[in-house]
Length: 62
Image (cartoon, rainbow, N blue to C red):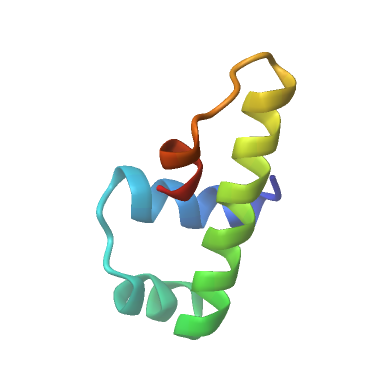
């Protein structure tokens, strides 16, 4: 995951920063923040699966 993806993921998923607020803080827009979050989640799922932690169908959608 890129540093920006990590920053977005941590801010939203762990620190509950609203997307609009984060977009302003990053000098970005909502769509770019959503895209970074989507890509971060996809890479995290792939990394977990590669490390032997397969996800169930319900977990993959979360």
